[in-house]
Length: 98
Image (cartoon, rainbow, N blue to C red; front, side, top):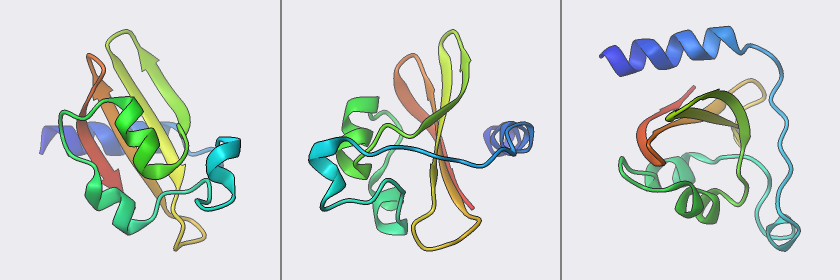
């Protein structure tokens, strides 16, 4: 519960529009956004390289506080939605899709 609250606080603090660019190799077959199916493939403990391979882009870095980083992607199926993944020590510790 505490992680969800922290993720929501971070989300509110970063209410700016989300823009990301896909890697050229992935641009043709994978849009620079996170789908619900891609979100479901992400699990606690994964590293950022694995997430990039799943989603097709690195996302937008919205918080960088030493060991903790948060990245966001626009939601492919929604005009206002987003997917968020937080990392601690280089591994996923939480994820959120709105």
